Image (tube, rainbow, N blue to C red; front, side, top):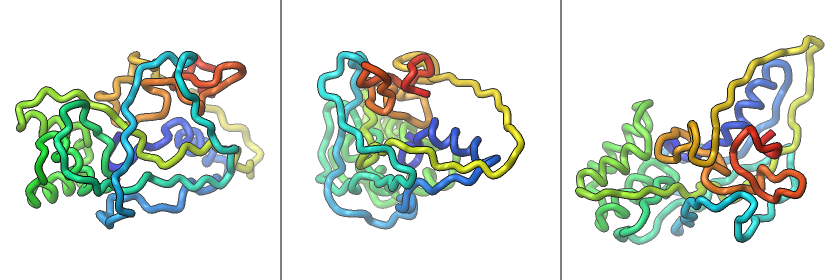
Length: 227
């Protein structure tokens, strides 16, 4: 995940390409949380990343029908108690930079962060392009002399399959050469602790990539459902 919430890399890339010759619809009505405005109260859910085989996952999520006017909503802002996490640290907990810094510091240290720590890191997340959430978490872990295992929960309230949204307006054909490096799971560009952005299906099969008799699959162009 980058600074706030994870994008849908494939969807956004495809829409950007199509936009050269067409007009695309919008993708959501909620402003990014990096303005620091408090969202709804309540602890955001935490779904630990797994490594189950795509075809052998336990429960398969049911997705809503595809829509041409999706309204992506982030999950409720994290406002839970400040508690020490002895297990994996959730890098995606907290939508706004301030909420994230508090959530990360609390998980690592079990105490509320100093106000200047929140301000310092929230400012860097907004203004310094190479500062990522995982960098903040690793800094906290190093300062606490902890070897932290990391996990990345889903920051979205729901996954929304997309229907075609673009209408061709021109008469010329547009060609493009696309290079894909997403050898998930665990392959090239698919390390959760390495990638700047995360997509569904990187560590476990996801119903967004279902195809034929396969109910879930990985974020990998070798899977038919990926396309």
